[in-house]
Length: 400
Image 1 (cartoon, rainbow, N blue to C red):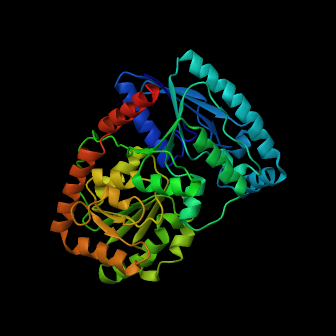
Image 2 (cartoon, rainbow, N blue to C red):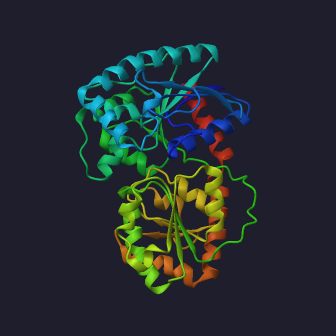
Image 3 (cartoon, rainbow, N blue to C red):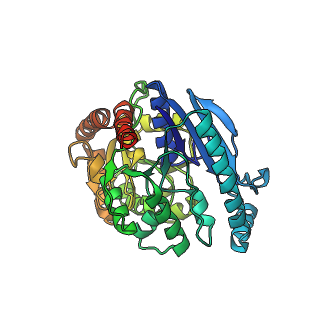
């Protein structure tokens, strides 16, 4: 089969769960003998190569017309102000409209060159955030399947937040023009169907993970706890910081490792003086470094409020962490409580702290949960089995 995946955050370069999921699936599809191409219209300042080959997967990065090296420093104040001015003035939307037209032409050339039979696109597209009015994604000449990873509308509604009506209309139109829809979790499928009043059947195929990573020879630190993810409210990092004060008061030798980009000072501000010295921030780290840190840790904590599917949780489980995961959203689809991890209420700070202390104080139970977690990941979420499930779904679409 000849498949085109659309993705605007394909690694290398900073990326989230969609970039990781598409990368893993694309590589596995190529290993299974299929022709795989990935293309995306990237946000301002993303950088990296415009065209390259990743383990046999051909990758294209297309840019907005306004893109330049000036936007490279994404964290700088001047870049943030510049992007805001371009957005508020409407200049950026006009550029997006022109860029989408060029992007459509480029995609049609790829479709012709590689004889693409099917396109998969995510429900989240970065360009939507910069639109003041309706700017739908262009229609393509081959069937387009949409995969629900969590749209802007989805995460906003989950957090009881409002978004501009134009964003909702764009995402709803994109969803409705797909020939079929698949979701990475049952929870996300049900909620997205409700939010968008979508009545057609949505297939469920979880994200997969490469379980063939080499066994770690690094000794685990029984007192090291790890969190991976962006330092934002929906990931539960602020609740974890508050809970860590309670952990520190009873287990002062325990250490919390935080891996992810975001406002570190806001997290530090929630820690008491005694706890601050026991928390280490590493910022964004590439996958190789990430797995090294996970392998050194004994406990992974993910008190998220809103997830579509927690790849970070699977990574921690695969690396032998006893995982404490949110019981909300898709959490129970990954973790069987007290069998291969623990489920907690992210709003219950005391429950988060109690769960961490329970594993710190009971290393035997911690090790048993970790062992069962590795088995669960390999049995249910191995990328080869997930890729085969996707292929079966694609074939059903192509066969009508």
